[in-house]
Length: 122
Image (cartoon, rainbow, N blue to C red):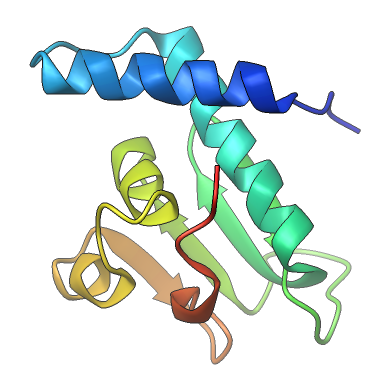
């Protein structure tokens, strides 16, 4: 299992990404990766389970939400987005419905909806 990111490290990475973005700069890859993984970790803590896979390539993926478990191949409920979209959704800077409508979130499956789980409280 992956190493757990502590709260201080996760918040520092999020702050670094936000600062870089606000300055019109590209965030450092290490900060972006840590921020994404930290927020995925918080989602897993908030909604543990195995029925929905949330992917933020190339940084991470997590299986969350109680329900039917899949064991092989592509899960029936998959949500995928880029790092910037994930951070905006997880921190409440963007609404789930808006990101889906704009095509920044690819979601397939009847349970592939994080509306009630976001934003997280990093």
